[in-house]
Length: 179
Image 1: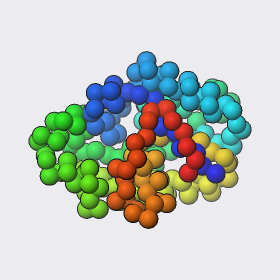
Image 2: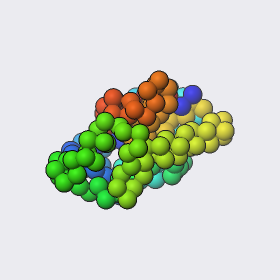
Image 3: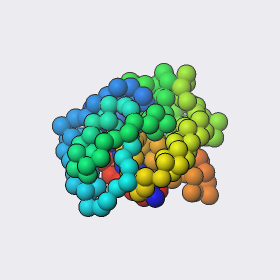
Image 4: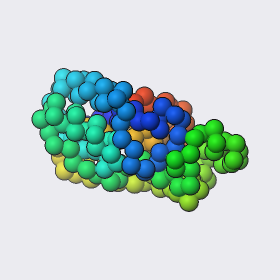
């Protein structure tokens, strides 16, 4: 069985800014959330610990790994979506500058792709390939420290709406759930 955990808070999360694959680290609150996640994770036995190589996920996974006695294995397929030219921009600025793109993103238009970035379909394929790779190793249950977009596409896989349900779920920083 796979469990997905979202990294702790970053300044970009607090500001309402697209971080995509930018190398953003945790805030002090994010570190506290990572420690809380570690305490929750320590309540069970784990066969494996994986994480996105982005700093916010690596930092969170290192804290969790210290609590559960496992070294995180970086897996690039669990990186957040490449937000392209929206990276580093405030949500409000994107909405004002690209209202059609913003509407397509929020409506989870199946044809949506971040400008100069990744589509949700590409993200979904990449993430599910990563899940298959982790399952193939056989170190389960496995905890994967990743990102909101990764968790959302995982949920979409089991949802009859498919990727059209992408925006249906809010995923709080530092939370964990079974896949």
